Image (cartoon, rainbow over the protein chains, first blue to last red):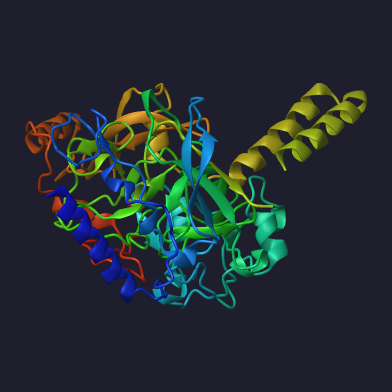
Length: 340
Length: 147
């Protein structure tokens, strides 16, 4: 039963990839086996459902090859709890395999939603960054917000690398306050390579651990980040625009996601479960918030995870409006770093 | 910028102390402070942060969005900042006449739920569909302004 499920899952993946913008026919992931079936708690790996808990690890075959800088391999690694184990080494190009980056900020207050991305501040709403947003923003954030030229309607946008790097940091330079902030990935050679180490077999923690800056990697080759620092961004009267996939570019790590909007859900679950979008640094899968029927689970823990017989322990991303993916880690984490 | 401001104020204080009466100095500092505050006035609020402002990691929390949606979960730490992480489906409230009303509506809306997936289709209401979406989903496009 389980074997057939994964066979169908892989077939679905292949079918989905065939429809994506990028050619994934050269997916060169070469990890020896499909580890998604993992092992039962009694140590066997026959896929029986007699175990109390199913342990599942990342499946390197699920990553889109176009998002990877090199073939996924395994290497020895040390996790945050001191465990020395085997990790997948995932080196990403720093640009999504299947979507274009942007747009972020519209140019003029007359622009429609197709010219801009989105904005969310963690307060429960997601805003389309059409031109009118910048007219209405005073009502949202205060009368001191002046993000466009009243004579021309042009929106103040950080449209150079100097402007981007002066604005996309905690202490925004005074001349770039009251701006819509965007950085082009072209400033960073089309993407920053990063290396992510994820345990082949997750190591559960007795107590959940907090999330730092980045928390995982998506199947289309993008870093999954923690909540965007919206308080700092808004304190400078800036909007750090996201594209419609919930990502944006900063000088420190290039393009990265702050929200789950479906762009990386390249593995479709066939049992009406939510789709897989990536893996956390502890090796557990991160799935979309809603299942195929638009429903959300009622039994999520404090990290936004739970366990089932098919996937073992896994997370479900929160909504974009909440400015976060998951709440914490239930497993010891590998690492992520920008390649020099 | 803050450190530059602080340094400038310190220099101002040191120089002024020799020349200005204390009252004038206080006035200058008060004006500088009020200018800073005004520069960042507005309606910036983050309910997920506010819900955990006086709580510690792991404590239960909840907050309201637009007076019609109730988010419930626990406080978790991200980069030293504590936020309320929702772990239950969003509760959609019909109206909030007063606190008693909130509790009544919430109780009615939240019977004992088994630990299985249950219908909550309204959860999709605030989710945007990506432009380059790969997998069809139930997510709906929403363009919102204000609460």
